Length: 139
Image (tube, rainbow, N blue to C red; front, side, top):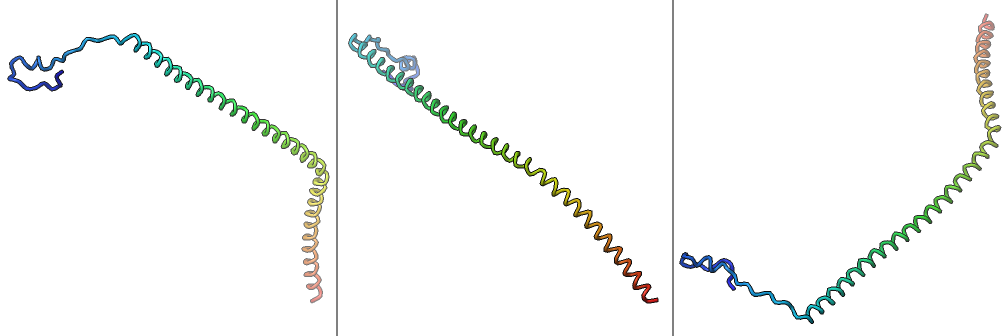
């Protein structure tokens, strides 16, 4: 069999002959070889398919475990939300119980502010009176 590139000749007609390769006639393998090759192919195909099915099965098991964990987390979150709701109701009830006292505090604050204004006015008036008294006293 010749290998490419062809050998250089004199350039007259032998370049086509050098580029042509000879082909051997295809022979069929023996019956025993075919049977062995088929068994080998089926064995390897079975191994491959078993691996694919195992991987798919493992993926589904992983998804199942993830779903179980997610479900547990949601149950925990539900319990937490229920506790928060219960505590919020308790706080609202306590606030409602304190509301009359808070209203009283607001009224007292308003009265203290009014009393403070009256004290400032009284102080200003007493200073005016003192100034008038000192003015009259000097005469």
